[in-house]
Structure formats: structure tokens, C-alpha cells
Amino acid sequence: MQKITTVSLSEMKQQQKKISMLTCYDYATSLIMNEACIDVLLVGDSLGMVVLGYENTLPVTMDEMLHHTKAVKRGNSRALLVADMPYLSYQVKKKDALKNAGRFLKEGGAEAVKIEGGREMAKIIKAMLDADIPVMGHIGLMPQAVHKMGGYKVQGREEKQAQALLEDAKILEDAGVFSLILESIPQELARKITRSLSIPTIGIGAGRYCDGQVLVVNDMLGLYKKIHPKFVKKYADLSSIMKKAFTDFKEEVTQEKFPDEEHSYK
Image (cartoon, rainbow, N blue to C red):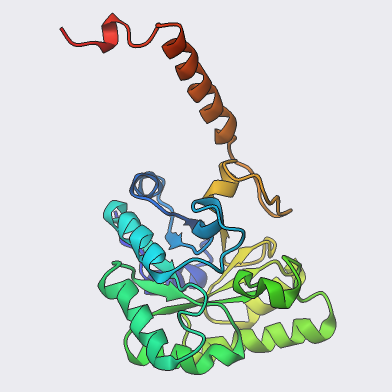
């Protein structure tokens, strides 16, 4: 089983092979994703909402992110492992950004970090690369800027904003990101950005023309129902399956059908 690296993603773009990417937060899911040959596992700060129950991604801490990154690392052998840098772990001081990014590689076992932001992040990205820390960029809808953006809204519909996103993408490429997440932007804009870059783009709500696609695993499995983005395709309804299993268990315990002889020691 060939190990996926940042170089692998570049080669996949050159060979016009689509990149598969999913968020992952635990050991067991990591093992299954490896068996499914998912190319990139992202320990996303989305765990704040879909795993920890926060209202948004802003409260997530470095310790929480490292805890889950370590768990995913233990189950991962094939995919490129990328860790999301949480809010305020990289935006304020370059020294803190380098220290926190380094912790993901040194302590968490990640092979790259992801940060949100456009041209304003260029200097931070270059500093991380100088410290041998690979960086994935993220533009368009940026969940850590949800209050600034006025909610989870599609970005880049207006010409001025679309041009700014195209410029940001090129600036980030020049800064050295190995790939770029495009979130919630019109697919024609995503196609234009993808064609203008030599690095791969990975879309989430950015249409079919990106070099790869990513979804939040809890969304695509039907486990998280508070938010229903248009771009999410549900590949399973595990919520219903789990509810039935829990209900059946309760009923069998109540009626003294479990445990039976088959599930008891002699």
C-alpha cells in the first residue's frame, strides 16, 4: 500500500487523478478509511461541532486537536495526515504559529497542517515552510471567520470578491502551500482557480472541477443533523441505524432477552 505524501498530491494533479479527502477524528474510523484507500485524512476543527458539540469551530483548543490527531495517527498508515490549526493558534504571533504547527508534527504525528486565510497568511506560511512544516491553504468560506462573514454563506459570487479569491489563491501558491481547500464558492470560479494553479485544489461545496473533494465524515454518514449544507451528499444514514441498535438493546435488556445463553460464560 503506497503512502500518500504532499508530493503524491502534486503528481495526482499532473496525472489528472482525483484526490479523495475526508475528515477523521478517531482511531477506529482512521483504520476504516485506510482500508477504503482515502488519500487524505483531515483532523478538522469541525470536530468542535460534530464531535464535541460546540456551536461552531471557534472554541476548539490545541489540546483537543492534538488529542484527536494522535488517535487518528494510530490508525493511519496510507493517507496523508493533515491537522487543522484551531482559531487563534496561528493568527496572532508568528512565534506561536510555528510552535503550534510544530506540535502537530512532533506530538500529534501529523504530516502537514491546514490554515485558513488568504494573502494575510503568506508570511506565516513561508515561516512554517522554513521550519519544514508543509501547509495546506484554505480560502472561500472560512469557518473560523464565520462572524466576520456574517454566517455560513457562499463566497465569490460578486466579481470583486471572485477576483480577490483568485488573487489569494495565487499568493498562497507562491507562498508555498502544497494544496488549497476551496470552500463554498461557485463552481466556475473554482474551475478558474484550479486551472490557474500548479498545486491541487480540493473542493468542499466548490463543484466538480477541483482536483479533489473533501467532506466532513459525520455529515456524509448522516450522523450530524444540525446543519444541512447543500453540497453534502449523504452516503449513509448511520444515525437511523444506530438509533435502532440502541433501541433494540434497551428493549432486550428490559425484557430480559439479553444476555442470553449464547452471550454468557459457563
